[in-house]
Length: 339
Image (cartoon, rainbow, N blue to C red):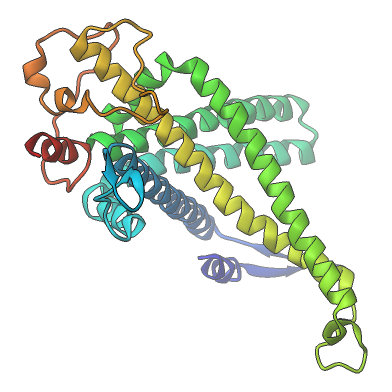
């Protein structure tokens, strides 16, 4: 898409200003550029949403799979699907395509508007309009804060969609209500994840750069000028290795953040249903003596009609369930009740 964008920019009329040249575009061409930028952001956010959904799908499948005793492996989880991450992508594309597209287009709209205010701020600055610069910067900051909140809501909504197969709006509402009850744990988790991510990025980047620097300086194949693989500039290669290591580490750290948030959401959901169906107090725990998540409340979660009409205050009513969705929480619970 970036190559296509460069081709689109090359359609402008070249204007020679003597020492430099510039491109001028008609109103129609400017509309094409704005539309292309919007589609680039939308497609990028859609794949980001699909990745978050696939990771959340795999995580919730792991969380709600009961522990079983095995003579070889001891107490472990069995029955998880093979190539679960691929199955998560398949489920997202086949059954939740509209949900993911709707969530990603919201961010795309906000981001394009924010970019528009940034452009207006530049124009106001060039013309010396101080009031216009101030207003544009204020609106830019407000939209940036709104976009950050929207990204947080979207991530929680995708976790609920993976767990309950709900629509985007219902999932966002329910996820916000559930996570509000765990605001203390969420704050602690955010701080711990940030520390772990920062340490992981620094360790992996530094280790990659260090090993590369040692190799190009102390291995004869790279340090001897007569060698075919001689590295003439080891500093540049070390920096390139550090950049590559940082990108790889960033991918894994983002996945770690999604997994940790999904586990917390599954834990909060199970505790919420435990309070609802068992009439327990707010301090109800769903962790057993070995520190593993219990699954004794899952049977009540699988048959909410049998639990009566009592609900917690502030609980969010489920929307219509889409029965076309393949194995998620509801199917796992039904299978456990049959066994």
